[in-house]
Image 1 (spheres, rainbow, N blue to C red):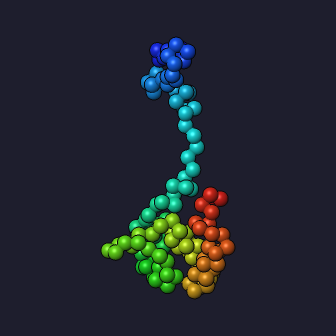
Image 2 (tube, rainbow, N blue to C red):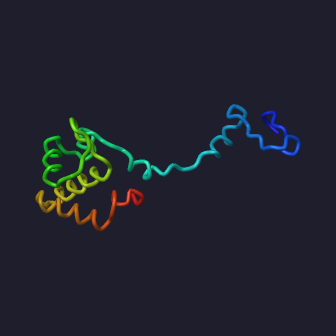
Image 3 (cartoon, rainbow, N blue to C red):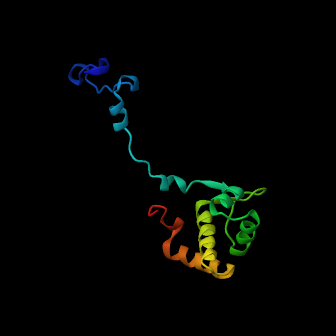
Amino acid sequence: MSGGAIPLAARGSISFPKWGDMAYGDQVDLLEPVNLAAHLLKVELYLGQVCQIAGISKMQLDYWTNKAQIPTKGRKQRIYDVDALETVMLIKQAKDRGLNLGAAIDAAKRFRERHGRAAAAVSR
């Protein structure tokens, strides 16, 4: 038995080895996959960050936010959640495929209604 742990029968309780006492393989075995989708829904982004991710200008994002009534937080500076980011990216996708802004906004809204919140961040 490594790490100086006393057998369970002798101690009367479970003893876990310290990190320094564990072999590298044992440390890795303690880890589990992380479900990023669950955590990404908590992310909030500033206007510039959304622009960088979506590949649009700040002027475009400001206009689209007003036109599509995309909800934001913040008073001095707009803050976008993942749902808002997805809406922006859907509008961008529709515009890139030739739709005008009004049609792109409608397509994004219909897509969101059909597919739900953050279009299944789990499915991506």
